Length: 329
Image 1 (cartoon, rainbow, N blue to C red):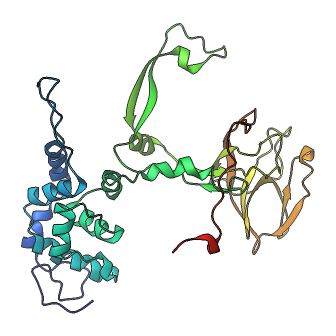
Image 2: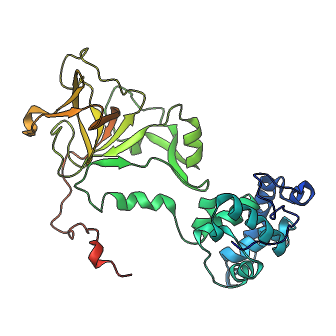
Image 3: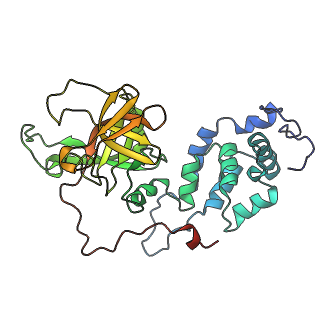
């Protein structure tokens, strides 16, 4: 990045901090500002005749402009602040010039991820929320994870992004519900309600890892069917050698190998880790070196799986990822 004269943001000096607290005083309390902007940027409901057209939708650029003006930041100030980000990140792509900011705010010009990172850092905004305004829903990646390469066993992300995502949960149970009987949940819930997904994360005392059992991985069949989604407790990495009475009580572990993952019973013999499959699966036992060939990620403590395989007669084959030679550059 070419050197620029020192500014009120201290861009001319390579420091981890900012040299002008008075200038940055405008950026304090941005969370409160963001809440005010959200309420101001969204059109309020009005008692107008139904025949009147709805108010024009606020574009992402207009939203960012409203946030900047609410914070009373000039374009040069944003430019100087972005130079601090670019300097400390060691990447000039984080720099947002005043001319580029004008394009982002007034034109249908989609900024790069780097520039969105800088603007969110300066304005005190959540990056995932801004990406959603540009039509990118990070949580949608989950809907594609089982469609591409479904035959491979791998870990699955459990992170929920964005504070605006809502989860439908039961808030009141029918008083006639009998807990000792098996029933449909939909029929016993008297009221459903929506709560922010992020609230569930904050209430979870322990964060689990999630794994997907590949469609060709029959190691634990029929106990764990291919296509199962398993919940892994990373605090239970020590392989238990005894303490179970049957195959259902024996701990199942999720193991990372050099070339993938495996979900199986485990047994430690010296420096070797034995991956023991279900006897019905006809999968051979594997012996791996604990130091160089395998790592126990945790114990499987929950599972969600289909008892009946999905019908493929009316569905097209699962799409496969293109080979490197097929990618159009």
